Length: 101
Image (cartoon, rainbow, N blue to C red; front, side):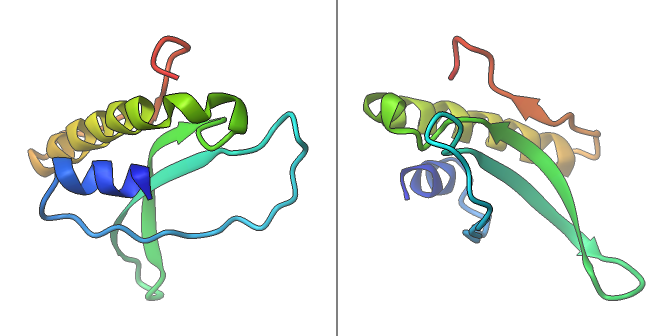
């Protein structure tokens, strides 16, 4: 919820939906999050998504103490992406650098 709250603090006109990826992973490689933006429905009524950001180990226990600061960094990236899209510019999918992770 830290990431959801951080995003909602940055953007007051956004809706957030949590989705579980039930794929089993290993102890070494788990905790990833992907943030996507729903754009619209296609001609078949399926929602079209656009990837905004991917973080490989956000929820990993080894990074637990950094979760609040990382949530703020991620929220800043999401905010910038959304505002760029609202201005009609194309955004690029982000992946946090090692310093930001």
